[in-house]
Length: 145
Image (cartoon, rainbow, N blue to C red; front, side, top):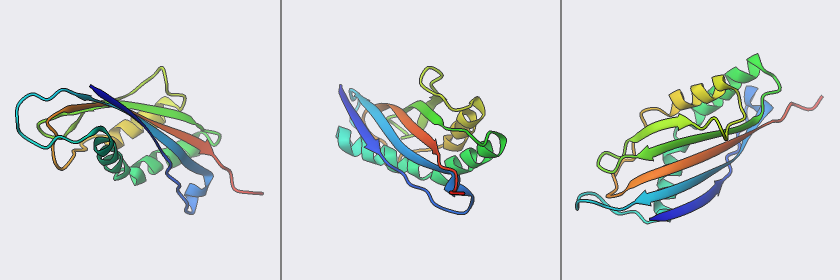
């Protein structure tokens, strides 16, 4: 079993989006042993990069979730921790949830993010199942007065 830690910074700029910045995400990825012989076998770093790119594909949806939450709670900031598995035969992200013990943003933001990330699938499945924890830290950066 292999475990990897990755820090990933995502910067966002735009009209309404100047109010926040997704500062960092970390993934803790564990690859569970292979059974069967179909699919490719990514190493830990490749699995982490591929998973990160997959999650990044929903970046606009995650930004929309935060933008919506800022309208309700202008001071919203904190950490969102998502946990999930990547199914080995299909590459589908399964068992996607937010970790209540390590999430400090509102339940509304966390639920919106889980919904936004639903349905993700790695293009090339892997011979091993991936188990991941991905953290996003939201920092509220109000525009200068």
